[in-house]
Amino acid sequence: MKHYFVGYVTLKGMYNVTDTQAKKLTHLNLAFAPMKDGETVMTLDDRQIEQLSRLRCANPSLAILVSTGGGGDRGHGEATRTAEGLDRLVSSTLRLVEKYGLDGIDCDWEFPGDTGILEEKYQHTALFAEYRRRLDALSLRTGKKYWLTTAAGAGEWYLNRTEIGQSHQYLDFINLMTYDSDTDSFIAGHHTHLYESKAPGCPRIQSADHNIRIMVEAGVPLDKILMGCAFYSHRWDKVPDVNHGLYQKSPWKNMFGPSYTEIALKYENKMDFVKYWDEDAKAPFLYNGYTFISYDDPLSVRLKCEYAVEKGMAGAFYWVHDSDLGGELFDAVYDALNNA
Image (tube, rainbow, N blue to C red; front, side):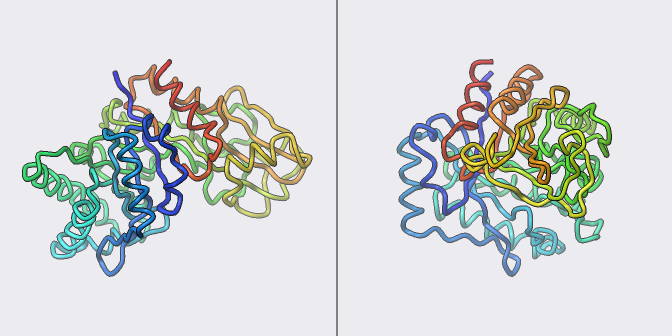
């Protein structure tokens, strides 16, 4: 079975994807095309169009998708509240696909229902259905395959706010965000771990393994789910020096920490930081007596991807290419997917 290897890259960071890496990827998602006045908007400048052409030349089989929305974007819900709004949003996205000769859409509506409007659960499904209908119609006209994927939140909250157990029928695959598991938390812990830690103080069950299993239980086939790898970190400050900071309380919530590039060059066993490994969770972390940093390293992503292959998952993806300039995590993902 060939596994999907999917990367997210920011528009300004497209030049960081080398020709060699483009040949290894199956899909590349351009992030992001946000919502504005009920439409999906994205304008590529001349340099970005040149980069798009370069990537296509490097790998003619590479599927390049427009990724709509993003983590902080709430425009999908407002735009899809009426049939007219749904049509306008979908039409604007399809125009981008045709304008730039793209290969499909990654609907990155990460937080349906976050506005408190419960009807977004059904709007979410309706958007998938309409995207699929319009992409299939475009395919009949052009004779080309168009992909439809989504970035899905990991956890019970996402399953409760969506109909993903049924709406997956419209999708080619799902990028399950098996990271950010301790978002808005005062407890310093793993944000991208494969299994549950046995360290005392773990606030909740939130590992990749757990979130994959409950998505399958909700009705999503395992072979439509991709494992998520984090090329960035989360950090907590003023963390008590107990158990190297793991599952200790900070006076402040976590924030985004350094990229993996910065971690490898500046943080691992430098500046008083010591690298630790949680054997149960299969996850690394850094601590210097004050600051706790959770992240993925080459070993943790290799173990995640070997898990994905062993379990029969569709493959793996990562956020975000710009944060691994040395390609260490990229290579670890690719090797594990292809050599496991």
